[in-house]
Length: 383
Ligand code: SAH
Image (cartoon, rainbow, N blue to C red; front, side):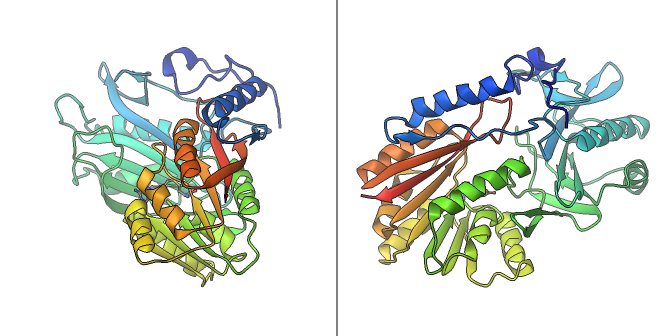
């Protein structure tokens, strides 16, 4: 593959990444510095950021918003900090097949004369498009987000889209009637195919529904999970908690090295996927609960339960002080913290230190190449 530095014509207006402005290798050095600033006082050993060989077109999840420009429907991304849509056709970090499908859907909305949603008036139908691709299986899901359940010419629209893109394996209508910045609503109606895709990660097969979380860079996720599995140092007997587990990917990748695993996840759709995934992969020593991770850990602590290892992977806002206090009561000898935000990670490592857990080593992994995000695995041990 060509390793030359790609250029992006939208970089100044889009704001989602700094591609072409800073050489890739330099971004890795900058990210390491940032991680050091955020967690350096809690963790002495911070490794170099594990970068990607070809850091382009890695995003397996691609989103665009629909809008109007004169009398034409356009799709693209909001310019940073505004609600002005920049029509983007060939984003260098998004999957190229997904970009092509978005272009076709936009053309079809024009030719079917469908009404585009207007954020100010709350009127109109077509709001967003979300594409997810299983990078291993090549399965592709198209989610059409509409403001109302009615979808004029639905069958013809789906037929026309499938004709132009036979690679699509499922099409879902998601209904989001709320005036919100959230892309997806709660209701999904499969218009074609099973309503989910599958992907293979760490040798396991995972089902992914429209609303479930799935890491957006599949290749680097495997690098990340390998670090996390090594840090957990399982011998086959341990009881493990996989907190904030999503569709169960990390817990399942660890289950064959553990005694038993319990996944905790707030999103009910993700828990449904996780249970189906355990069955699909014939993993019997993993169970899932749909609960708030903090509430559930407090409950376990109050019941006097203990575990050997806690793996946690909270959203950008990080975990909570109460979760960390309850974790200390549950008394694991190791905690493996996977973070997508060094700032909240630094705060949480401070709470862990107070509770008797020392951060030993950190491995940053570049999942969000060319953007100002950084993923990180940290091993903590009970002092
Ligand atoms: N470990 C998974 C998911 C990580 S993303 C993976 O690697 O794919 C963070 C997950 O935390 C999301 O699935 C989100 O739904 C979940 N989450 C957010 N807040 C939560 C809470 N308070 N309790 C439990 N899960 C939560």
